[in-house]
Length: 104
Image 1: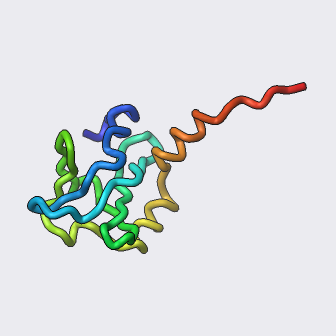
Image 2: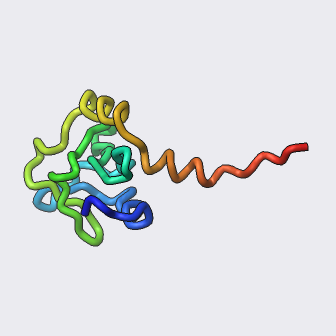
Image 3: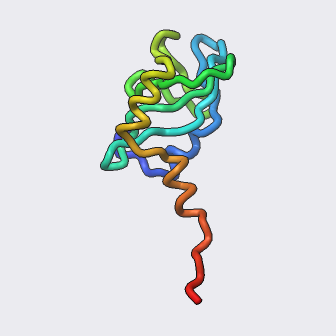
């Protein structure tokens, strides 16, 4: 699903991330490459820690994101690396929601 439209990726926001029914956290953002293809998911763990789930490790369901093994969810350092080398779906979406400033 590398050619996903932003609208379909937005449905992932706030979905629970689970491993065998155990909630590990929730999706907070989708990180995109320069072409707009997803590279991974930013996740806020149940311990309120940021993490990164690489796109190939995400098994998307209609109401959750499954991970094949808990260690697929990487630590904050990896999230920060990918945030620095990618685009944020949330930020891209927010930029389009800002009101235009009138000249005058």
